[in-house]
Amino acid sequence: MASSIHNSDFYKTDHRRQYPANTTEVYSNLTARGSRIPTIDKVVVFGLQYFVQEYLITRFNADFFDKPKAEVVGDYKDLLDASLGPNAITMDHVEALHDLGYLPLIIKALPEGSRCPMRVPFLTIKNTHPEFFWLTNWVESLMSNVTWHPITTATIAHSYRTLLNQCARLTSDIPEFVQWQGHDFSMRGMSSFETSCVSGAAHLLSFTGTDTIPAISWLEKYYGADRRQELIGGSVPATEHSVMCMGGETSEFDTYRRLIEDVYPHGIVSIVSDTWDYWKVLTETLPALKEKIMARDGKLVIRPDSGDPVKIICGDAEAPFDSPEARGSVQILWELFGGTVNSKGFKQLDSHIGLIYGDSITYQRAVAIVQGLEAQGFASTNIVFGIGSYTYQYVTRDTFGMAMKATSGVINGQRVTISKNPKTDDGLKKSAKGLLCVDAIEGSFALREDVTEWEESAEGELQEIFVDGIAQNIQTLQEIRERLAQS
Image 1: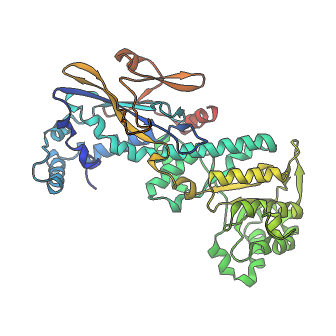
Image 2: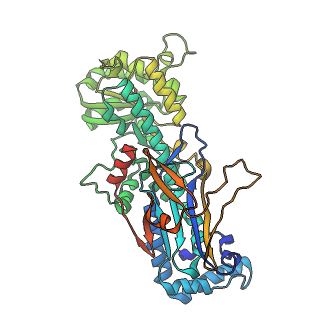
Image 3: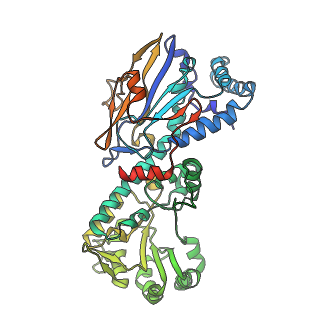
């Protein structure tokens, strides 16, 4: 693997000569500038501790500082010479950094799990040694690359949790079920294994349901979680289509019976049910197995996996009257297995039967489904959502406008205030100005711009998380979950 000094964009490699002469400090911030999702106006801060520990400390030490200077600098020079031309970039600044032995930076951030309003910085960064002023914004490419996705996933997961909490308060007597109502199905659809880990971990800030096993180990490694002391994430036995197909279509009934009676005689088991005829399963197979299902010490969870999820769960008004398609899954299961009417007047399916839908779920579809259930008189907690790549991969850095911009610096010993405000822009790209302070105000955060050096250093909610090669203010998963739940 190449040295960490390679982990940037080409255009960053010579910015040190482009800054004004005698520049000794560059001060920047990382901010979510705006939301492309109308229902979200704050981002959840998450993943910064991972970035600091893994990329700025572990990897930089292992493949840069702890390796011979001639080796890492020579390799970097070879790359730049081949790509930009011989001696286009000199190596004296890289050699000096290697001699120093650590990254001379101070990074401050809001505590992870905080919900930060758009256009309020959740992170600031500056150099601590005058000759390494170039390092502040050199790290932008890597920082943005590693952190935008966990922040985005954590934010969207929290929006699901907020929706489901609200619906449970209105329609259900089992609000504790909500922590399992959003289940992470995203691993196979993510762009890389690392993305699966960081996004899966971000999901687990708001829910405990997951099928992304490595996210649990990731949280133990970087966020002090302990599977023996706390519930990090959990799942249930579940089938896939290969299992159902292997038994054969003509023996589908026997496959269901074997699974619920022989393989899983108790506990929760989820069975994918649209391998051939989903409506036949609901109207023929399940009625024939009703006695066995109701006798189990556990729950059979039915999983439809194709079609329009809103219509599959809540019914299709355009389907023939009283057909299975018109009635929808929840209504059919209610007619077959019954349940209870809770204190709020909504129907909750019998505890022996449940439903999960995990194909192409989006926040908008989740809203439509819980609204459809409410209209039919059903509690929102009759459904579990498998949240996959349709939610967590259909995003970009620009979903919340993540950007790192310099707002202050020191030239010739004098502090200068800088900002950008393009006339050709609609205002989104206008940056903050000067040294920054973020204050806690009425349960949220507000930005103070162009503050004094003392105010920037001593006031506000931004905490040091990295100082001269050492991680600071390490936070645990439990602390982050509690902070987010209270926000």
